[in-house]
Length: 155
Image 1 (spheres, rainbow, N blue to C red):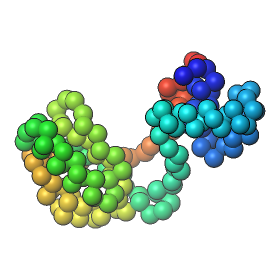
Image 2: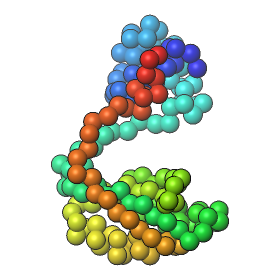
Image 3: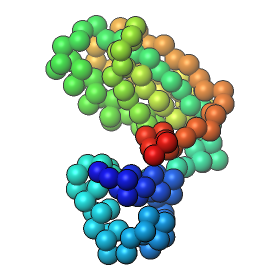
Image 4: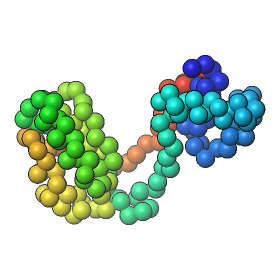
């Protein structure tokens, strides 16, 4: 990957809706050359996909929960079983195996606290291998950099 590929990724990270012609102009390539580079970035796994950022609060999901979960074991098959079960829960937007005092951190979007309480009781508490669940609620999200800006800062 060279500086042009980095510039393409940074541009797409800032605005995935940018047209190939806009990107090509900004990075100094023809449209066909830019298209080939974007396709190569996709094929190589440097560019995993395109997504819209949703206004979840405006869509009725007013509570964001950060949930730390500790399991009883670290056996790979138990971790895999837990991960499969979490993937089936509506509202879970992120699941990360983490280091430290807990095993997993989940990010969950809920309509309200009653919705979270139901999810906790009916889903989280029934996940395989769970020993402890510790929930925190986001009071305010502070705007941060895009992944592309963080990765390519200073380039």
